[in-house]
Length: 395
Image (cartoon, rainbow, N blue to C red; front, side, top):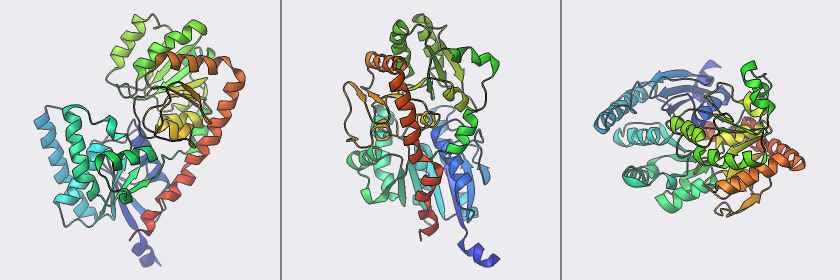
């Protein structure tokens, strides 16, 4: 019996820079915890930073690729590639599944350069890549995607619109792409959402709170959110804005809030191990991103029963909030969609109008709270994990 189990056992390497702070990292966490016991998990990190629970063994490449000048970064990257080759040779996995562009390139290169590798290469795309390929660095990314991605065994994309972008703008073969949405452990989120807030946070949430969560970067667009919040305050005097997360723009965003005279009403609460208790005590979630893949934070907010107001950016928000519409369409106004509100991207006036409407209309607020809870069931890990069954059956 043991021999038969040994024969059907499959080994998966998850390759990702870290296991802390991010949507892709949460997906690795959920997959490692929920894949069948017949699969052995090995999580290979660029750097051993871990914030999320996991199941399996951790191996660190220990490469500081984000430090130093370009030459130093390239040297470290290829040093990591050699280390990965040794790990794959030793572990003999059936699959190497990578998350994020640096890991995806490394995964494919390790298969391409080291032709004796037997494991199948799976890369996961979690962004709308056409939004990334601007400037010199972006042109390099576009060239590498075009050259390398078709060499992968399978490309897992998190949204249909992002998948279409790969085919139309990067020459990726459609038959190589499989769309699998981000999974959520709804039962665990509900448990964490019920944990009471610490006393030092309770006073903030006695007011109507607009909440945003994500890395403080240009992509996440918190600048537009802060500017739109000024409009909200003109109508809803006691409104507060809470931003969860960290990032390179944190200082400039705090300066902007002071410049606009909003520093007493905007709270930067940093990265939180349990963001769900903050989400559950807020009134609405606003996504101000300029581009996404399939925004994990939007789904997490919906799991906490929050009404959603989101920029209609590429890609994901429309696919989540208006699944029966044309995903290539982008509104030029405010669209009260089936499961949330979509707003023209980067239009801070419309964003504040939509937020004011939801906060002021109790019936609309209740409607979208119920709609969030209804829609998010489609992303439950129990449902999404079935779409990864091909790993068991693939020969």
